[in-house]
Image (cartoon, rainbow, N blue to C red; front, side, top):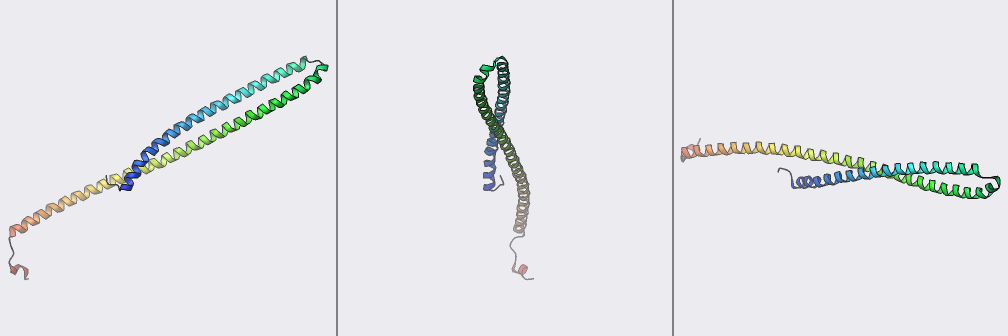
Length: 170
């Protein structure tokens, strides 16, 4: 109640901002968890598919005769090239997911820092408000004391009655 209008406005503006930052923090944490789950899924699929394909190729190589090896070699080179493209794509996607996780982590840290600053500012305003309230209470007590003395002196002056002109000559 003893804050300036600017301080009151700032204090009322801080509360919704803190709420928004908390909501953003929750959203960032959720996105981060989803991204980490997607990353793990991609890593698992990549490992599983490559291992299975390697076994298939090894089995095919052992069962192929010399004449068909020449024909199949070109097909296998093409499959290898295609697999490398898929691995590159998966690696790029994994890199993007990792970068996204890092960005979310940085956002979370910034939001937490902003929240801490706002909480500190809010605490400072609350402390100042308490100090102002205490100071106002002291002023009101002094005012009441002075008013009581003024009343007392006014009453005593009235009781004395009008003063003669001799009272002014000293």
